[in-house]
Image: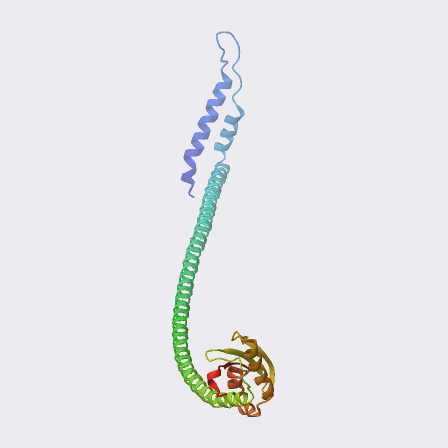
Length: 275
């Protein structure tokens, strides 16, 4: 700095000193006669400060530095607040973004789960419907097979029954023919042993029941129906008993024997024999 820059401050300092000296020279008194109080120390400090250009510069520099530091501190505090606010907002944004993503993921998972359930339900329903259809088709098939089998068995049974009827009819005819031939032999043997009593008259009829054994032997003989004449009835029973056995009956089929000769009723009439 040049010396000219000190002229004004020096002049101001000298002026202040002159005023102070003048104040102390004159005896200023108020109307009450009391002295004025001494000037405040701050004025003296100011006078001293103004009197010292270097100190003034230092004070100004100090204040400026203090102001700068204060401003810097405010700036830093503002920047810190700004950073903290930005950090807070960033944290809030991050939290909000995380929440949004979590909700989006939750919705996506729920949608995916619902879609998977819908698909699984649809597949299950389709499988159940298919299984039900297969069961229904299998049931119809089994019912059809059962009907066909029943019809086949019915036809087979009808055929078997028809064949059995034919066989039975043929056997019946064979048995009847065989029985007729053996019946003539039985009657012949019995009639050969029948002695008609003198009391017999035409029109009399006595019936005798005879039980044969498969060997042809006569097991039992009994009067089945009386003619009304005791002698005639007795002669009929005795005629059968005298025969005793007809060996030819052993040649009959058991079926024919059981049907025609195991129990046989013999009719006796006087007209059947010549006395």
